[in-house]
Image (cartoon, rainbow, N blue to C red; front, side, top):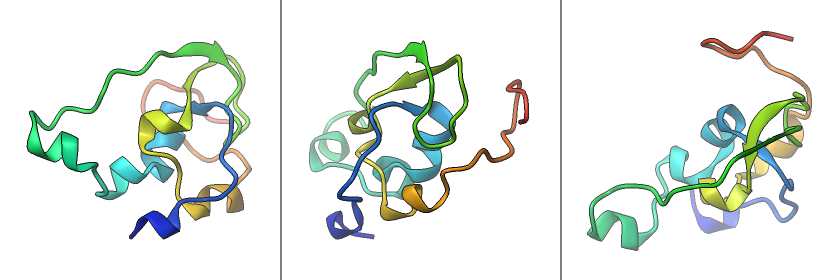
Length: 90
């Protein structure tokens, strides 16, 4: 996967589950600065709002840049998906 796989259109807000599912950094594409330093992703600021990817409401969201931006496939799945963990399923 390359930078060319980055979607031209990015959502405004992304929840953690969608960021992990579609974010470049979670697809194995890490910036050189992270690889050369201590391998930790930069901190992200979250707030409660709606995710523009899965459409869930009242979830913690942040900017797509905090996931290394999203890959092209994020726009093909603009419907809720089953989430694992303590989140409720839609």
